[in-house]
Image (cartoon, rainbow, N blue to C red):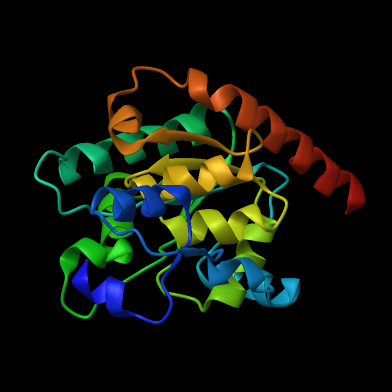
Length: 229
């Protein structure tokens, strides 16, 4: 609070952050500034197609669903349970909804395992080994290329904030899994077009009723892609 009181300017990117600072007793003016990721532009679609081909995916006419999940540090959350929930979701999408599924890692850290999304994706892949409709992107593309890949999907189900932001800019249907309030705050900013549930709700869900509306939108998008081709 003392440091923020003495700064020349203090900016926040969402109402939740502003509320936290007010709760801490900060009374000075606060400047709302949208996340810089909102100003980014995607790479060429051809680059996205090449990246997906590099990791085994070829357009098949089936809906393409991108998944992106992360580990968390909080002790109340079980990484093993979340991996198992993502495996179940992927199986449901492939076996019950005839979709292709690509796991897309969004963030890594030089030393903190909780930031290594690719390791999470590999844990999912081990459970789905041999399933011909599941693919893992084993690299961390730059944000512009990531955006282009998101634009080729029919549905994105993402947990990372910036994956949610960048995919929402591409006109694709996005379902956010909020591991932190900053994700749900962004969903509130976007409005009813972006749906969300918490990570805990996702892991505990006993069925996929939450998937009905976004997957219906994904099917419509997939059909329009096929018609255009």
